[in-house]
Image 1 (spheres, one colour):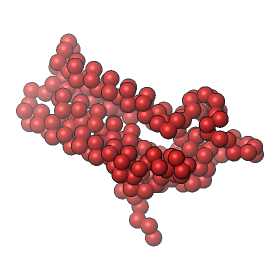
Image 2: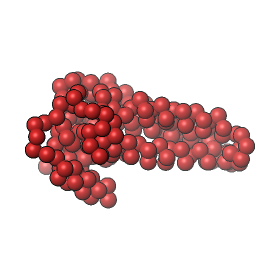
Image 3: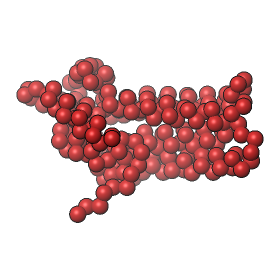
Length: 199
């Protein structure tokens, strides 16, 4: 379903492209086209999404035992341990994904060289840094143990999807053209998926 939507969006964006000279991203105005709502820096939407994710996660933890939210904590110790275990796994996985994306693959070198990175953890997900942030925040909320707060990761995933579709993805299609379109089709936006074996 996601792959079909990606293909349709990419085709629409390709039709909108003009025959003018390629655009230098540093010269882009705040609004590039109707599909782009802000320019993409080296950090992308990371600081914005990261700040929103951390603030909502902290609020979810702080208010987990207050007011009507207090009834969301299960009385069963078994469930509590399951949530705790799942939360720890998600936090560790998110931290490992984040560190591998930033330091293992050295994404900054790809950005400076104006190259599309599709290796390492970037072969599993197109946005491993955001995936790492999302996993750690989700894990922290699972550790907090309040089932009402599990709606926050769903909201964050939806917000991230919208932000990426409206900002980074159109710019990357403009920059890398068919190479990025093919990458979009084969690799998930957020959720890691083992890369297809090369024939």
